[in-house]
Image (tube, rainbow, N blue to C red; front, side, top):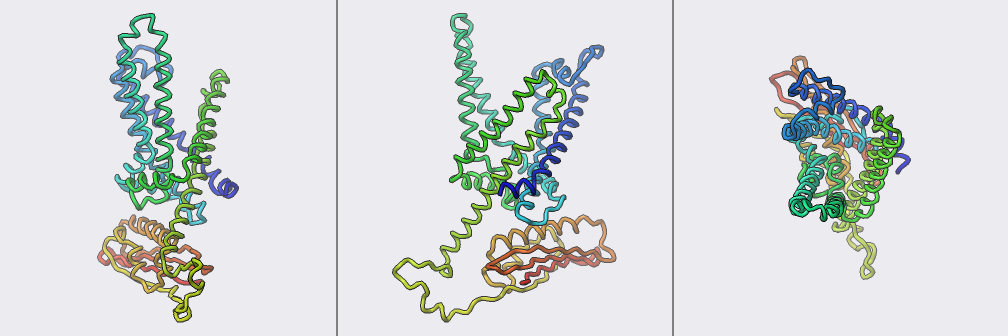
Length: 399
């Protein structure tokens, strides 16, 4: 699995982190230019971005920092989630289109969901850290005015740090998977992502702790080398995308393993509750007598066409359920997921045309294996003119 992950996604991760770093530099440059508008002494010579902030009063600085942080999250968080989905597609040996990276910019709901998935836990941690620091500082303010008590301040600072670290670990153990779950199951929404992240992590919390510790160690080692380089690495901070890429690759590889195993277990659990998946419990014969009189359901091929004015509002899974196919096909998680993704991508692409005069059409297909059968899932969408409805054709056939 690790070898496959390295071949499939490590190089794209390197490129993506370099691109994201450049975007961050651009945003900081824009922010620095805006900050310059608020400098009271225009004659003062400024040499760095931090000089702009230093010349601003503290309340303004905090306000602008908050605004900048929020806007940066709105710009970059959907890019992260879309890239995760792109990587998951490659790891699942599915068609991975470059447009998938920008999928989470398509609606305000997805943008806000991406920001919540990536930043909500950090926001909670920041609020708790601020609360702990404020409480301890307020309680000791009068005591620390006495020089005899001043030496206790580092002790309480250490307590604050330990408490913050404990909260961070607890949040990670329950919600570390959130951004990956949202990318993997974006159709379920952000609330389901938080709920499922806590559920999926139930049997893997020790591993999650180990992975986050490894990721933190890499970040600390890079910071250590930056300090030891006497500022050389800090001046060429562009190199930070390398440790960031390693951390992202470790997280994606580990999260993908958990999510794939979880969905596989869910399918097996559904099978165990089905009479067709009979298991011998020692009291009954392995083959029930009536098994000889049940014919196998061989409905593996069908096609259905639907007309609609709102192609993006059409639910391909509902159409699949109405098709003349066996239940093994209709209820297969892999087929439903691939059909949903394929249809949504095509619907978005054909929906971008300004005019349909003369006719527009688009089609594509993917494959999925069920019980040693390879099924082809194909979707075709067409529209003959601006006044006619879209025609969606969904086809399942055995190769």
